[in-house]
Image (cartoon, rainbow, N blue to C red; front, side, top):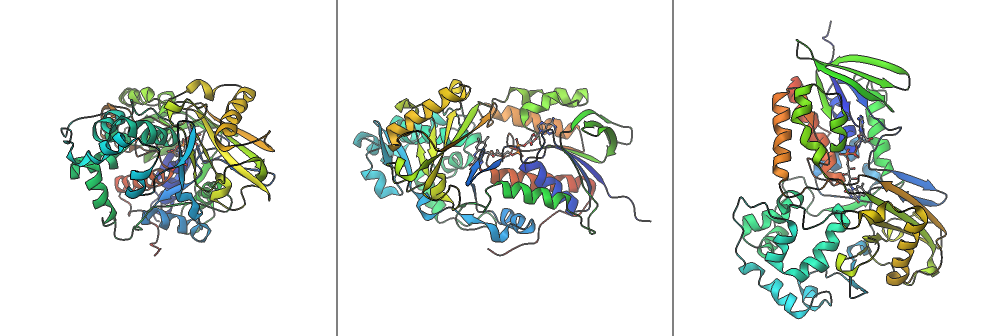
Amino acid sequence: MAPPPPSVLVLGGGVTGLNAARLLRRAGAAVTLLEAAERTGGAVVTYRDGDYTVEGGPNTLLCREAEIFDALHAVGLGDRIIPAAPAARNRYLLRDGRIRAAPLGPASLLTTPLLSWPAKLRVLREPFIRRAPSDTDESLAAFVRRRLGPEFLDYFINPFVGGVYAGDPEKLSVRHAFPRLHALEANHGSLIRGGLAFLFRKPAHPRDRGKRISFSFPGGLGDLVAALTNALTAANPASPPAQLKLRSRLTSLTRDSDHRWQAAWTSPVGNDQSGFDAVLCAVPAYAIPQLPLPVTLATALAPTGEIHYPPLTSLSLGFRREQVAHPLDGFGVLFAEIEKTFCLGCLFVSSLFPGRAPPGHVLLTTFAGGSRNPNAATLDDAALLDGVLGDLATYLGVKGRPAFHRFTRWPRAVPQYTVGYAETLAALDRAEAAHPGFFLGGHYRDGISLGQCLLAGGRLARRTAAHLGRPTPEDPPVQP
Ligand SMILES: Cc1cc2nc3c(=O)[nH]c(=O)nc-3n(C[C@H](O)[C@H](O)[C@H](O)COP(=O)(O)OP(=O)(O)OC[C@H]3O[C@@H](n4cnc5c(N)ncnc54)[C@H](O)[C@@H]3O)c2cc1C
């Protein structure tokens, strides 16, 4: 008789946990996934409201890695990828109360009204600025001020960081939050020289695409969650069945004398328990201190409770086209803190992907809160709507009330990789090393973007498979 398949417990059914779980099942493991919420997807949530398709969390996937496209094909999304419209390369920024197109290349950087002439000359001095000592852990703000000058920080980097991390450049570590930027200085001594070399670089993997593409799917990013979930749970005689348990929480986890993990959990159908050969933890960092872990593991993972997640509220609004004066010919607009706006920025969602708003209407998604203005995220609906409408009227020429709106509130949105984050990451490494068969990953460790979380799931699956002595779980390679 064949030995039973190795068993793996996965905690958390966001994109990281789902991708790891379905790959491990593919590699022949019997997977049980516990998800605390009533749905999978975590930060990825798509609503269909009448003829509007609204993303409450991320709006686009931006990546070039062959591994991600292989995964999308493997879960049946290969021919459902919808690249963002070409106009998405236009981005807008705000200076002196006016929306301006962000420069698309070095020539337009010289002519942009977003920077004064002294600031442009300061940017041109960048290749001659000395690099920081290799052990420096500098804030993003200090790094940019040093290399590119304070105006570049205020009008380019500050709004960009608000859009990506909902974060504060004075607190984020350039080394940890923007490792590619940090590597340009470390490897080339200059961002401009490194940027030029970057343009002509070879992909990290020979099958990776030359350029990153920004895309979604016909039903939004919810299609990704549905496809990953289906790949995990669908009947497949070639793989052991997987158990997906929603609204379920771990109630105890111990390691027995055979080095197996004994887990108990509660779910809507009652209490259950089982033994596992490995445990893979893909919950947000702030959820880890609440897990009933063995004392040594809980102690080792205590620093996860210190990771800051600022609150953020996303407000999507539908308008009749004629209510909006701006041409909406781009990805969206990001607001610099120095401009004292209410929100962080606004995505022109219906300009990016087809079918997001009913005919004759547009869909805009705005973000309020973040590290910059956490109180804005927690205002009541009426006050938040008023604040957002004020910005839209002033900067995009929006008139009147929206035909549609939907709030998505994130009390803890995106983890902040702050200065000193190396200590947090080292604590995670130590915790894993001292507890063989327990693996951690996701947005607080592997990068915050959706693409990085898909890759994190793949890495977790490979590390778990290696621990179990199973073949490396991989999707069949697809040529782009
Ligand atoms: C508003 C917003 C906008 C974003 N925009 C973009 C974007 O445009 N592009 C982009 O690339 N990225 C974006 N991101 C980031 C990206 O969406 C996330 O980093 C990524 O989805 C995180 O995936 P994850 O699986 O690591 O974590 P999560 O999505 O947080 O999943 C963790 C899961 O664990 C579950 N869980 C929690 N506690 C427990 C427990 N005790 N037991 C079991 N399960 C538990 C949660 O319910 C959740 O389902 C955005 C994020 C937010 C919040």
